[in-house]
Length: 448
Ligand code: AMO
Image (cartoon, rainbow, N blue to C red; front, side, top):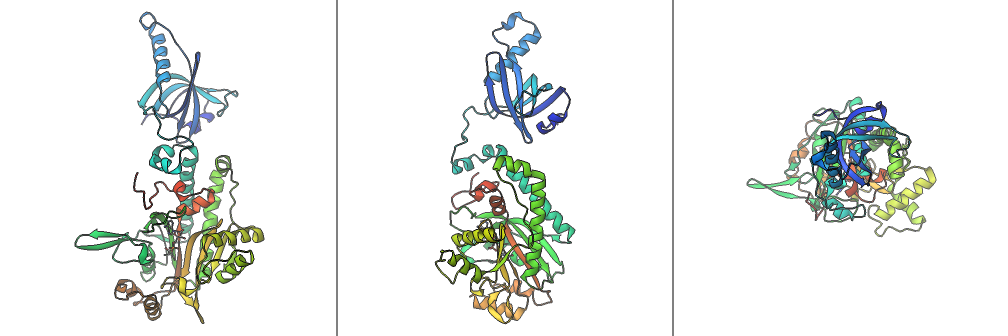
């Protein structure tokens, strides 16, 4: 490893010799002076070289010949090439980019880029996805993944401080956990396996295992053929599950505290950069988040003039936008828990309301008008669970391994699953989860 200085650390150094390394963002090759904007993972700096031209290399001193060679190298530098530069750092208020520049002493082209860059600032999202590694060089894209790191770190810290255990459940499954319609089937030796749609069954297994509280951040797969801005065929699911809940209310309480921890960390560390690059003044939500039963939410939306096409169904995307607008106007909040979903539109493992079995102890969390999460108290009474599975048309024999979890003692429990890329998309007001997923997977995208 060479002793390079990260560009973000240059400003704090005194004038003097430094080595920096990164990729060439722009070259301004003027007659008497050359400027290179060099970027690394931490920022950008201006490099300057007094151009030495039209010397006869045969007849000059070694130093002058080297200066001529450097000038020629810079003239030929292609955008995107990775270079190492040793030179003199100089603080100069007149330099727009950070008030510093590095006067080039020596420059080495470590890896040259093809001169024709395949994407430009105005390239389509799809084209940018084709060249994702180049697209990710942009400061905005970089920031997204630094925010993701900070956000997940804060969630983990919250969980660890609250005695949650981190688990990693298998992604190769013998059966579906969510809808059969969205299941990827793969050859598995003599038989078939399915890619996990959610860690649902195995995070629940941690409850009879006596783990108390668990979380997982891992991949989930959905064979969903849709091309919306919010669906991927593979996404990172952020899951939690905990014992001894009295109802979904306990899950929502943990969920909102967790998000406050995540947003606080992101605002503290990246608030200024988010304002600069995304033009957003990130808000840390206040608790409690508003809670509205689904039936009431539908009525509110209808009163605003939007009638959800099928009243027996879930909110549709426009309904989610409308209820979010209402919550923003009424409570000044970006989040809303929609609660009390009908049993008819919830999976068999959701607990139904005592004395009102048409309703489940469940919720969806809407953030800036889009669903980011589903949570619920689970049905842990085996006889009721079997009945609910049958009622949903599931084959209890196929679910035997899961039903066994409930036959040897299990505490009441509940949890949620949350799509990571959706949270980031809504936090940064991006238009697609393609922007907030490192490498997007969709019906027509398996590369790169
Ligand atoms: P659900 O199916 O609602 O619930 O998924 C939970 C959250 O995961 C995200 N998500 C997706 N993100 C991108 N592309 C997709 N195709 C996709 N599908 C889902 C969303 C969604 O809110 N087992 C339950 C959770 C639980 O009850 O604990 C489940 O998977 O943000």
